[in-house]
Image 1: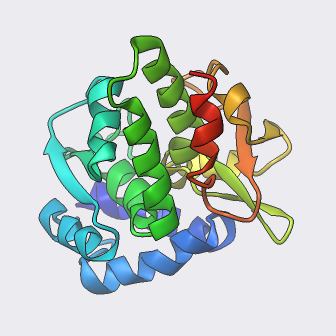
Image 2 (image 1 turned 180 degrees about the horizontal axis):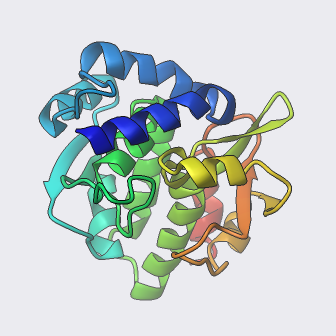
Length: 224
């Protein structure tokens, strides 16, 4: 609980200035309806009921990472596979794998946004029956959007990717002039390599929305 509180307070201190407006709209609703707060780790069942009422998404507990195909296939049916464990208390600001801080603070708020939920499902639908190479491309697009995506609001970059919204250090870093900021292009994003053990050297940003339009997947499908 102490580990959760440390992470929660640090991320909440940045969300008003670094996160997209949709994230900042939904988060207070999670505090009101799902018990979000620095002294309480929300139960996945309660959060899942909230998402089901708002966008039809549900959380399905898993014990660890899934294959990209299994994970993306779940999105097609508005199912998000969520881990249940929390990072080690000795290093509360880092985790080698997604934990409940990443899932509940990073992912869940935007899955309560209808436009973002639709976009996430579109990626999942595109993965159904796709070849292994196509699934890899879709997983890469997912990485650069749902996990590490940026958007522009009133000319300023904001974060909407869960990997950013659940990482205090990278949330600050991603909006500086140190990394490269590139307009989102599915053709480019699908084949751009990325590191998994360090801050991203490049981020893709969309226009005024917290996620690319679901229609952008049509252009991606022409590449697959």
